[in-house]
Amino acid sequence: MPRPAFDQVFIAPRAVVAGVERPAVVGVREGIIAAIGAAGDDVGWEGERISLAEDEVLLPGMVDTHVHVNEPGRTDWEGFASATRAALAGGTTTLLDMPLNSLPPTTSVEALRIKQEAAREQCFVDVGFWGGAVPGNLDQLRPLHEAGVFGFKCFLVDSGVPEFPPLSRAELLAHMERVADLGALMMVHAEDPDAIAAAPPAHGRRYADFVASRPDASEVSAIRTVIEAVRRTGAHAHILHLSSAAALDELRAAKEQGLPLTVETCPHYLTFAAETIRDGSTAHKCCPPIRSEANRAQLWDGLRDGTVDIVVSDHSPCTVDLKQLDSGDLGAAWGGVASVEVALRAVWTGARERGIGLAQVVDWMSTAPAAVAGLHDRGAIEVGRRADLVAFAPDETTTVDARRLHHKNKLTAYDGITLRGDARRTWLGGRPARGDDAALAGGRLLTRTDTRIAPAAGPGVEITPLRSEHG
Image (cartoon, rainbow, N blue to C red; front, side, top):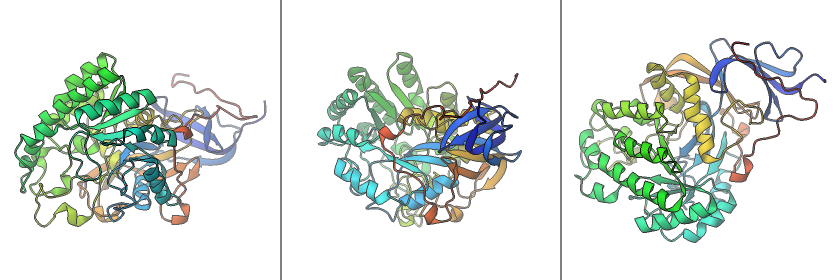
């Protein structure tokens, strides 16, 4: 048989492959993983040889399905160049952009085209788009689906921007019936407006008062509404940014019943606890809020037992003035945590402290998000998938300096926090990716139909089976 010929051959003393960490060699052709072998199997493999250091682990690039880029319209908050540069620096090679906070919001095909044109030729990682589900755009769902959005996002409570209003319960059912017909996904910001209206209004500097303004009951009630809509329509629903562990039992029960339901949480809910957030720290304001230490522990438990499927950043920055730093007024400040660059480090730090391995973090932040979004061609080091790869140093210690992060407005809740891990080098389709030169912005704009797994190998490529650690 002819000798294998690859564009790149990655030699990794440690790699996350098939859910475990082990030595591996990875052959890449035309941007696709064409062969995976055990240590030493690369003898005779031709191609550019890339060796990882002993303290590095080869990972698939992270897939962040919850990022607010805000361009066009609010590009002073965040833009495609700055957001994707930050993602790349943190080991994320694919992000999906949320349909709101940009102007216009992505609630029609025309708006999608405007956003795609704004993003063109300035992305450092691959970027896809969610569509929006709002009152009055039911007939736009099919055209958006056919245009390639990865699914739809809706709110059940005020979104914070007037151009993206929430759905009523009746509208949620109607939209989810259409989503079911399309075989698509509905992502839901699940907070109940009636429960929030009955709570004390957010005001002042006390973080405890802000948490009380968006109680656990608001999430629990809204999630019940979503579960009932899934039961009635058969649509796949995805619960965004779960904050309240009080909803875990009902989510667990719904999944045990076989309902098509997936759940995400975010690094800030796993990293911070309300008791330790200083009053007036508007960098920590997000909706739903960061809750108690006991709640945080239960969210980790929900990840471990599979009730929570994925961890994504919900990167939602704004201009510094909107964070009301002078007054520290948590009622008036914009809600959102800027975190796309630190997400992997933050989750790995918390996981390591709890005895959770890096392979599990990769599943939560790459493999499972890719599966939820239908990004079938990435999210794992596997033959036929894209060679979007990261050399990650899990033992390295870094202290976050907001001034050195790459997102546009230099404010984050993680400023001054010491985290484990560093994404030292990244490759998109096997090619080195760097964020220090706009000419190197090699990310592609994705549509839902672009993400099929490639054939296992081309002519003349020998596939070396991966052997287990026990030979």
